Image (cartoon, rainbow, N blue to C red; front, side, top):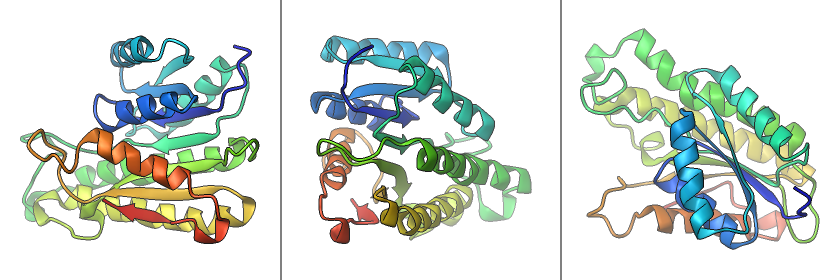
Length: 236
């Protein structure tokens, strides 16, 4: 792996926004490090990306947002697989999106347990926090027009909560606060931290909120050059 290409790490590179992000940055000459919760999933996604971008180096690791230590270990693993070279961009795209009838899914607020709330906060806030800590110490310095950047994938529930999705709503609000804090902390150091706030549900019937269009919003943030005009978030 002697390529001097910049690298993006995407934590939570599922078949939606995460995969589209990987593909978009690969188009712009980035190598890719990605994580999912299972080896089979990451291997499958990496294979599909490799078909689209045969000249891109793609490495994988597993990370479970409910276990922050696994997130840190995955970041370390990705860097080791790139022979110690630092990433230019790190994206935290893991969310506690529970399906219907699951413990993390839609639940009347009065029935939400402390354990469920803690799980939501662990996935969004605690694992997002250890990712930010790692990125602040390990991102590559700016060079050749490439700026170091820390991204978070946020959600409209963080500003307009839904009582039936109280856990996810509070977790997204906490993640937004985390990102804003790191934006202020890292900007003087030349690192751009920002959140892409997804303000509508991603469904096949919503042509204005496709994973590809959302990925493009990340790229627009990344291309912001003037430090004084760096945005802390974009609502889309």
